[in-house]
Length: 495
Image (cartoon, rainbow, N blue to C red; front, side, top):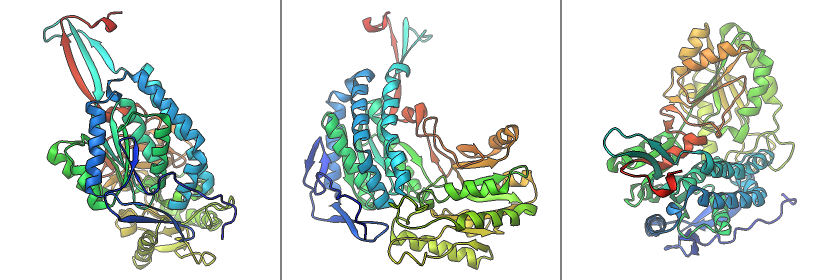
């Protein structure tokens, strides 16, 4: 039993945050949140119903249609963004604590991420000085002056999953607020704590009422939010299956939509690269968040004549990973988020064994963890790219090593997937890394490690999503572009 963690309390776990106030839910249903490592109850929050969605959207609608937020200058909104950043810094330990408890990420990693969240808000605040919210043009369609103005898209429904709510929430909410949108944040039932903390943070920062609202709901009520006529844009991170459903609903009413979906990302190992370094790198990245990361490298493609050596190195490094309490500083991998998800991952491991793959290491529940949703980091060798475990997203610490004849076959194999989110090329030759990277149909390509960078852009090709998050690219989806053709410039633009 843990004795070294101080008690954790949300300010209003029995309420919903709507219109700048903590209000009672319309119904009595509750969502019970479980500690992923101990299976003990951790938190209970209200389950929003459709009438609560109506109230949240109405509050956001009023804030956008009548309130000051979208009418502020970007510089004025930036003041609030920096205040949010300061509050995030102050609450970073709480944010890391709940992420570890609900999703299983080791706390040392969670604390590093939590300390960077404020920087994202400061970055978007800095765009008030650098981003061209208004551009001057010489019109050819009449008039003397042309302006290209970028305005907030409206009310944004931001729907986040349970695996990485801290970062995923940040790179939806921060650009949406900077753009001037009003936000309804829909938390997942498995991990509502960080959205609740974010509501406390926005309240402390003094955001105008209705600019930021928080609900926790399951699938049926979430779909009601997506269908709501008062929502102008939906930003969703989650499974490709759910993303297809959301895209079809948004298509019915031409609502704007950004989707960050599944992945089955490839790591291509070229013959010049040391295989022990590959195994060492993968043992660190593939076990991050217990493999519950859409961009994780799960298909490792290597020349046939080097496969045995790579598998030996991977068995060595993966076998040394300590699985256990994610709050223990010595732990290398924590639990999966839920019992249901562990059963799903174990089902894929069974399919890998039944499908003729070579189980190199892992594949079981650790014997020393009788409680908690733990599974060993698992590596399969001699896997065909057509096998189930190489085609479907497992969302756990399960890697497939796929042997190929040559470099050309490696590229073809990497691209032979419905997904296209991430990839890496392991080689000492930057020219080859660039050349292969340009051939890969994927949103991010790294060299010699799992890499992604939300300060530039993140998103996928094919069924891995629509649009990008992070950086300037992540601001654009929350803006509409308008052309103004005028006889004279307004006074504030004449200088």
